[in-house]
Amino acid sequence: MTISPLPRTRRRLAALGVLTAMVAGVTGLSTGAAYAEPPSSCNLNLEHEWYEVSSAAVDPVLTHWKGITIAPGTTGSIETTLTEVEAVSTTFNTSTEISAEAKVFLAKVAVKVGFSVQTGKSTTSTWSQKVTLNFNRPGDYAVFKGTHRVRGSADVFVCLPSGDPWNPGPGFWAYAFGSHPAYTTFDAEVEGTVSCDTPVTPGTVQELARNKLICR
Image (cartoon, rainbow, N blue to C red; front, side, top):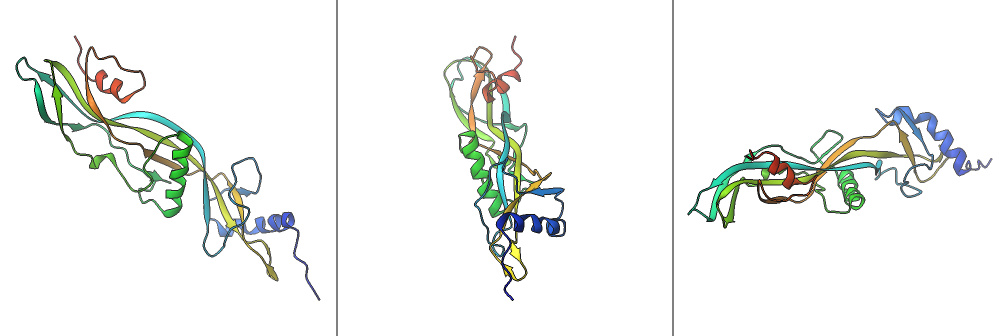
């Protein structure tokens, strides 16, 4: 007797009945097409999860700062040490250990926001706190470092078997409802100085640095 394989749609629906045992922590799964989709098939032995960008929000972060006063006659090249204000690290699903799949996902985040971001294990705490800058006039200044943090969540797909026990076929990607791991990453270092009368653009690292100055 020959057993014919189920049509692709029926194979997918049949496979959904065993998802709870296969994917821990996922509250629901579907093959609906309302989200960005991975390739049409997957390798069960090599591929397990596929991530697409669900959301991405960008905000400036002041990571290091110091207020200094340049007295008359002391202008020129000056070295100073900054204080860490806030640290930003790459994380995926609350972990700072970035897997190969998470690296691929963070590269998609860069495409989404339109600028390069960290795609591996990284933190702004490793940035040097010493800076050397030139001042051409006396006054009160904020010396700073910062970055642009990107935060959001991911859509998750899992690789499931298609066919039946007698006719195993390639796996297929199924969307995991209720599973939206959060992520954080950041872009390149921003460094500079601002004074009370420096014009700054709202929503920038420079504005955050100037706001910490006591301007009279």
